[in-house]
Amino acid sequence: MDAQALNAEGRAIWDAKAAFWDELHGDEGNRFHRCFVGPSVEHLLALQPGERVLDIACGNGVIARRLAALGGRVTATDFSAALIEKARARGQSGGEPIAYQVVDATDEAALVALGEGVFNAITCTMALMDMPVIAPLFRAARRLLTAGGRLVIATAHPAFNSNGPTFYAEMSDEAGQLIERVGLKISRYLDVPPVKGAGAPGEPTPHTYYHRTLSELLNEAVAAGLVLDGVDERGFRPIDEIPPRLLSWSSVPQIPPVLAVRWRPGPHP
Image (cartoon, rainbow, N blue to C red; front, side, top):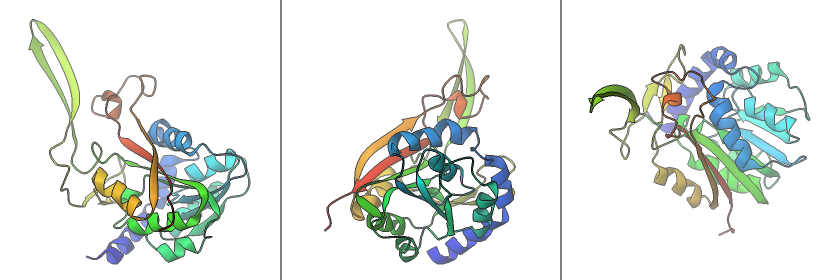
């Protein structure tokens, strides 16, 4: 199946489970979003009041609403018309009205049509791993940003939270003491094919995840004329989930499940 067909399949899946995803995240996002995604994005973005922000693949609008409340003038897009409908229906508690549009993040021309050189900041959170191609988004971002703008993405960490990790728990007797250990097993990284998986417990329909190594991810942005400017990795803190679930990210606080990266436009070629 080619990229266009894969993307169309993905759109149909997300349209079908938009209600589940909207309920899962609510107005402010689930615990995973509140602990990792939101704080990482806000830290790297350092949004200033009045800045124009484009939120690509906005889902039900969690990040868009937060950025509007922080004073941004927000345009938010998603390829799922059903998710955009859910985002609009949630409204917002503050800030200027968000401009929602149905735009496919893999369509470079459609993204650029939003306004070349007019956005101070662009965000894309937890969506790159759902896209069959990411080069169009990076190329469009380079053209959409102002000279001093920045692109901040947050994605499942390619090294730890991709298609291959398995949580484990074990106990051993060491010199008369019972020692419990919880960790993550990873057997593949360099060559991991796309797989369908559930993004959350109880999710009605699995969707395709596309694994990309760090080198693939970073080099796609560099090829588009973007310059790496900041990285954020964080694990669960003790207060994020008490008590921690045995086989979950809260039990492995030294392993970051999310990678957040900031790029800025490089010189024009």
